[in-house]
Amino acid sequence: MAQKIYLRFLALIIATVLCTSLCVTLAYYALFERQVHQDMQVTAQIFKDTEFFDTADVAALEDNPKLMDAKLRVTLIDVDGTVLFDNTVNAEQMDNHANRPEIVSAMETGSGEIERQSDTMGLKDYYYALRLNDGRILRIAQEVDAVWVVFASGLPLCLGLILLISFVCVLVSRILTRQLMKPIEDVAGKLNDDFVDSPYPELYPFISKIRKQHEEVLAAAKVRQDFSANVSHELKTPLTAISGYAQLLGSDDTPAEKRKHFADEIDKNANRLLALIEDIIKLSELDSDDNDEQFETVDLYELAAEELDSLSMAASQRNIDITLSGSSTTVRCRPDLIRELIDNLVQNSIRYGNEGGHVAVSVLEEYGYKKLIVEDDGIGIPAGDLDRVFERFYRVDKSRSKASGGTGLGLAIVKHIVEIHDAKIQIESELGAGTKVTVLM
Image (cartoon, rainbow, N blue to C red; front, side):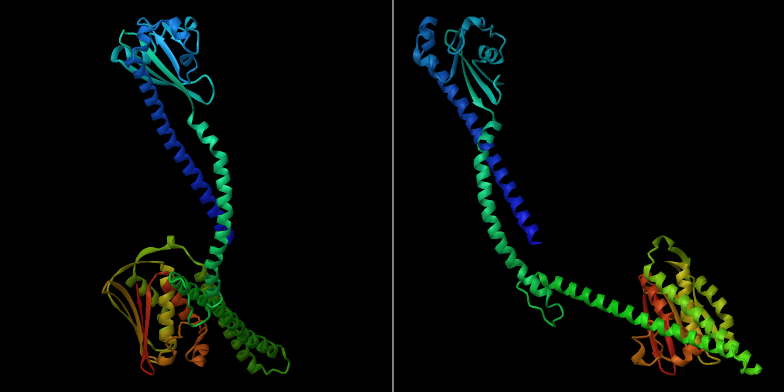
């Protein structure tokens, strides 16, 4: 991070110095051009006002050392465009200037000016023409450096300045970076403390978020660790039973009347093992599932009715009455997961219900929510266990759950399905009176 700060500081300095140099050069060059134009205009006007060229003949002009050695190029042009005098080139060798833009403008309006690229690379010429009292044209010209030449001439100074400022910047940025990073490094080492003090108030939301994520990572790791341990234990129990009963079946000392019982136990534990594996696979799929495209608009009431039909046999075996009330209401969901949710909730009510009891399922729309309610009059859940019922392999009544084929993963699957649908789940229960589960979509 510190290296990135150094490089960004350095890049910023180089860009700033170059941009500043370019802007200063352009501003200076604009002022310089304006001054050149003004100087040529003043010079031409002085010549006109003093009638210097009106009284002097060409021979006298050529014998004037100050004129011939002047830094400005001076050209005298007759009314027909013929060049009469030029202090840098032999006038007889020069073309007729009648069609030159600055000459045409001077003939018509009294003055004219133009810029031309010089034949010499990196130079350009400024021309100013003024009509004299006798009608002839006096033209003043000056050759100057192009703007890029002026900028290039200042580059050594810019580079020297960049090197000097870069050296200073590296020193300063090292100090500033150290001062900036130290509190952050101190905070990173104190994330587990109850209170973390920082000289930067802006870091407090960042600290809270990192701490929360850190806690979530640790919690998730513990959940995975506990899940692995619980899976090993839950798988081991039916496998041990199957292995033990299989050994007894294979023993010659086992009475014939016991063999059917042992075979039934093997079948029961195998089914329990299969159910456990299926629920583990479902949980794994839900953990990694992100198929928004599978969402459909369905009638929640009809979905519940179809699922309750398939559960009627399980309910009748325990003489439990299941009713469905409410009205048709549509939701956008994954039908397969909602069926799984209804199946797990109702199965739980049947499993933990009393013989001859009642399970009521309701589908309704209230306060902007689509509600699915499953209520029973079963054994209920102690208040101290309500916060944990959605944990994997957590059972309130372990003996009844295993005896009825429960895996301990049903409500964990329900919770995942609720989260996938951005829904909410509420559970109310009274020990010995029953349980009410509400899913709000």
